Amino acid sequence: MPLIVQKYGGSSVADAERIINVAKRIGAVQKSGAAVVVVVSAMGDTTDELIELAHTISHEPHAREMDLLLSTGELVSSTLLTMALRELGHEAISLSGPQAGIRTDTSFGRARISRIEPARVRRELDAGRIVVVAGFQGITAEDDITTLGRGGSDTTAVAIAAALQADRCEIYTDVEGIYTADPRIVSGARKIDEVGYEEMLELASLGAKMHPRSIELGGVYRVPIYVASSFSDTPGTLIHTGNQMEDRIKVTGIAYNANVAKITVQSVPDRPGLAAALFEPLAEASISVDTIVQNTGGDKSTDISFTVSRTDLPAAVRLVEGMAQQLGAAGVVSSAGLAAVSIVGSGMQNTPGYASRMFRLLANGGVNIDMITTSEIRISCIIDESQGRDAVRLLHEGFQLDRS
Image (cartoon, rainbow, N blue to C red; front, side):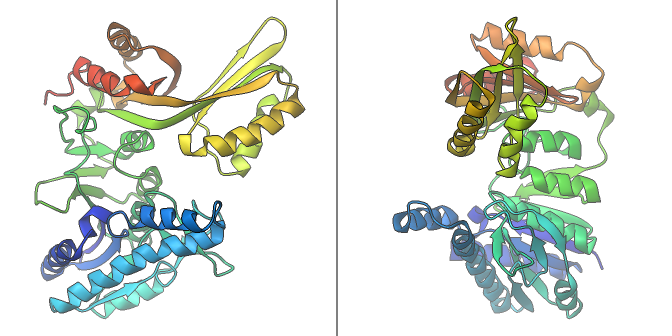
């Protein structure tokens, strides 16, 4: 019997009517002869509403208590969906993340899954039940509830699929798949039929619909991931190891991330260990650093600029200002109004000219580049956020991604 893991996002279970529609979809899959595990997000904007509520009570809510509070959103949606399945005549049971065996580290608000113990889930499947798991949450060795951060239900679903060796993990949301660019920005964006894990990881890391950690897990454990809409039966996008030969000789998509901020540490005495001293405290605080540029002058001092997410900027600045004084820096400046626009495609590994073409397209459109970062299959430019959407449209048209 094939085993399918499905995940439904908050918009898919936003109200009673949508929950019942999702239950019908799940029931149809079971009737086709497959065993089904379902992972759900909180209903609609529940998580945001809980965060807002917490901040009306406390200016700085305790991280442990915040995680326990936020975990309740997925418990509500998972139990309601289970009730809907039972009402339709299906044997179903809801499990919290801890009940499903999801063990995590102690990084409240952005915990990482350390392991999954799926014995309970297997027992329920063996009994013929549909298993509905609350996404986004797990439990530490000290029995504290944790949450996995934004998009954590994607990670939950792929991790469970890997642990159960499922045939496929299906992610259902409010869009019909992965597109060559955000269709809200580019009206001519095309849906991608299939894409490799590596390309999808770059797209997800830069703002595409999937959570990057879920793509990492899918790639490591070779879990095929299918992304589609829960509101239609239109075919979606398959993320897997295979890829068409034609797709390897072109740009796959344009990614855009408006959640970018830059910090510059000015005139630091250049010496061995400087970068380690600066970035180790950020790593210990679970603050991810992306683009890093170091400029060394003739006076043996250096400026170090790097980007973080805008949401991490206040905490990052506090840490960096403390370190800058110890390192003898002249000062620290920051900017929050930035964005990253990127071209992604495996064809860039061995084909010259993509970078120059990207830079020329942006220059012709009057878009100034602040910083540049690359990987084997990605070129990213940090630009002013006010020009971000125009840059996406320029690159999408310039690389002819509106053509099949």
